[in-house]
Image (cartoon, rainbow, N blue to C red; front, side, top):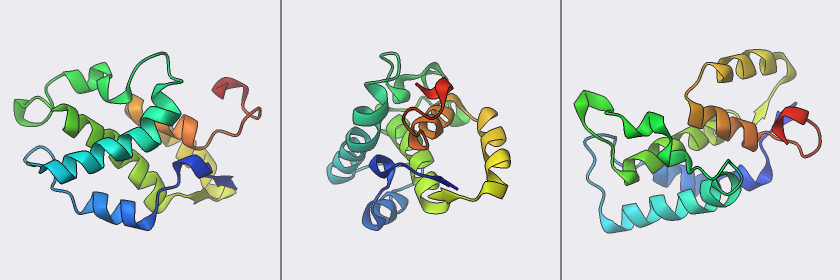
Length: 134
């Protein structure tokens, strides 16, 4: 069994609140929603991944700097939402992965967008267990 690390487990309220946000790219977030996104990103991504991953913020990766949907550029709030959506998906559906699913899950992760691979790498990392994740 492969379990999500405790520092990446989101509360049910956080997951539900995130899911209630308007969809990208046509979203217009109010100040309270923006604050929620920024706080959530800081709590889970900035503290746990951005500070350890080569000095890059996941929301600043080159894949997010290009045009996204319908030729529109993504705002910083939208990029943070895209990164957080990956973590919400892991929390929502895959807190624990059965041994029979691990191969398919990790093979699928190789083919994913860069930010999702990085989140998986840190969220399921066991300290001192995987030499590649040190």
